[in-house]
Length: 195
Length: 195
Image 1 (tube, one colour):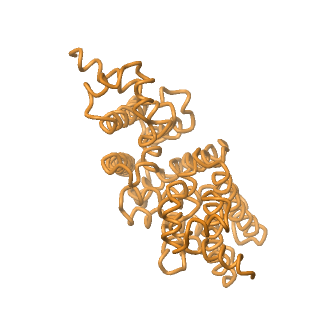
Image 2: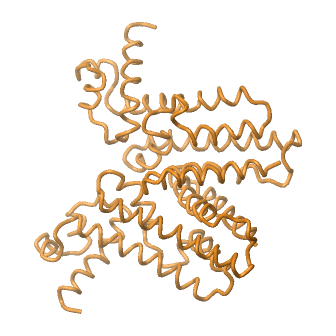
Image 3: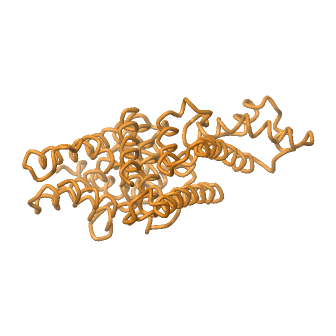
């Protein structure tokens, strides 16, 4: 890593939680200089502007989630247990090095709506990729005869993503964490009845 | 209705779709004067400020949704058919006089997060009231022996709300309406298997 690459990495690491908490559009250049202790000149020396930092910060937060999920899944044998990783991780953010501020996909999805088309595209791609990975696991489970053949993998995958993201959103607005817990318990039940 | 009441009502009706589309925080006083054709003085003569118009607009949009749901439910006999009203309405916004801009609860919930605590409280109350009405219907269905006794009305109600709101959110971000359709089909299946 060159010095420039290390500085870029440092800026991304320090600002990723700020973007995830305050919103990608809502984070100011001052927030970025405060989080990094660097000058505006130094930020602009490493990034074309705030938007480029925002995009890199989203990628960083998304990668953190994907690494947690991937690592947990690799230590589990059955497809059912692999799918239950989503339940464990989204039920217990704090047990894992989950991005501060919660699910970056949800935070970006609900915010980047029209303000930032490139970021919206990233959130959209992340949701579709997430849905596709769950659907692929369900198909694998059906092939291995671990799950019944009658399930619609696309629909179950979309429902799991909608329940998790809808559950986080409901808990956030109402301030009631038990609502998220109850909804993710329903995801667990859904996964347990696939086979 | 006094003239002042009629003017207030006129302002609310004209601005409700604007707030629902552009966001409650994102709608400017200029948007309000443009939508109504009234002067700033006239708006301030009828409302304390933009925030008060925003709150009244949210109430207006929410009432529109509740009236559609209430009207459809009253024409149906079984609890299952009453619950399926949510499927019909959220699957076919356009068939009903649904607020332009989509679900006002979702639009407000995801936006009013920290910017507007009174509006956030309204969105929170609306979600809890919605969840409570669904849970009450499920309990009634269990009492009438229309549904199996084993269901957890609170959990099923929360799951239905999470699926609908999560489904709309996913469709909005990805631009894929068929995702919402598939998720709401899953809600239909969930309701059909209650009994």
